[in-house]
Amino acid sequence: MTAGRPGVLAGVRWYLRELSGEAKWDAYLERCERDGTEPMSRRAFERHRDEHRERSTQGRCC
Image 1: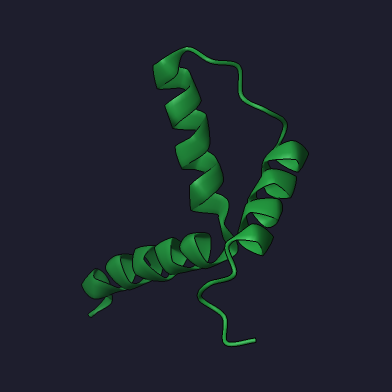
Image 2: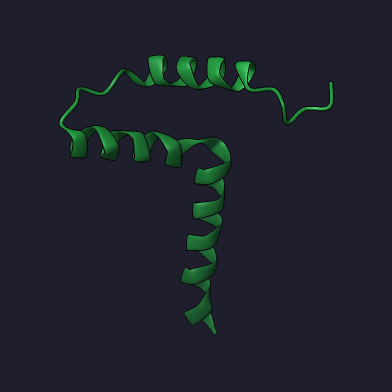
């Protein structure tokens, strides 16, 4: 009966990482490693992401 539980927990973990933005940070680090570039700090990454989100407000109603 617990055979399905690891899959469920992995799904919940994936969902929470996507929701929190943790997956975007990991993807950014992988892209920098692949391209051979120095990644910005986590703080700078989050600031950049927030600024981009503020400039791209077409999805909002107000």
